[in-house]
Image 1 (cartoon, rainbow, N blue to C red):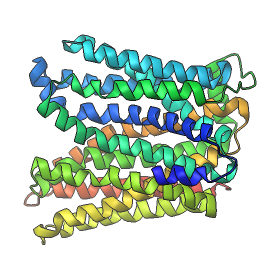
Image 2 (cartoon, rainbow, N blue to C red; image 1 turned 120 degrees about the horizontal axis):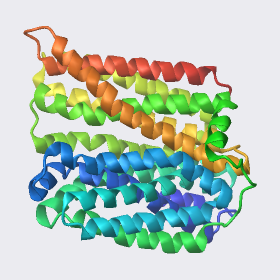
Image 3 (cartoon, one colour; image 1 turned 135 degrees about the vertical axis):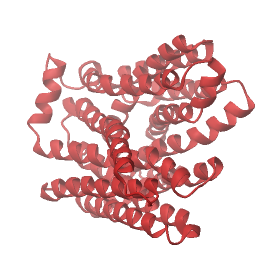
Length: 418
């Protein structure tokens, strides 16, 4: 990612202040994504240490995601109405307060409340990060900047399970949250000094009406958000259904599952910035369609190879990793290009709500993928033919359904004029 920011720096119209501002935004995204995944890996251990049930400790994840998802539309409108910089800085401060609350908590209830505060701050940071891009660099580099921000988010997601596992193993569980404090403080200091304080034109006086009216009046935005919802659901299925297949279907150990599952976020992190460059060079429409075709191919291939792996057990893990790389790389391409397509020509007074809608559709897709595609997997397990490895059959069915969702997204984006 450092090389990509360096490339941006070679643009005469992208001075040091703008580079630092982009770093501050990236830190905010890193914090938001890291604090989703860092808790996930520690849930079993937290349940034991806090002496609570697994359903109870899962509220640490659900509360954070719900706060982010529910507040995103309002966050974008607040940025348009009162200025993106003050709202962004408020988000960093609120997130920091929630993190301090997590560090001080000694039982589950105050920890859940602190996670709620963290989620509020994360919603403000995520919703507004993309809106600053057009203020910081020329339009010819928008795709690259979107790719850098997407890469940062993927790095946070990938770093969470790895660092979280180490912290919970060798330190007190409070260390899961200690690590976010210095990053949030640095992000605030950089953003306060370097982010432009450009006020938007006054938006509608009714935030909800402004948001949904903005979505209804733009067919292109509807299709972009709809496709974002669908592909985000598919990418979540790799995180939710994948571990069950790797464990029950091909018998990997916990350590091996962690290693295999790390391929997805790492590939997304590596692909994000190059996808942004390709978007700048070839246009967002081409990259969107290419990314969706790659995702579609990966979904079909992972379903096919999971069945094929029944005859070749030694190659089953390899047959999972290769399609997973395709799915996550295609997703990274889609995200960089779709965000660029939507944000590049947004009117000044609508950048906040537009960014919020993109992030809202993504979060809703992630939640739908965890619930709906998880349900598809369980149903397929229940009706799988006797004598067959049920987890393998259910996994294949789930990704055939996922392929259908990607085809639906592709059909909508092909009809869209880009």
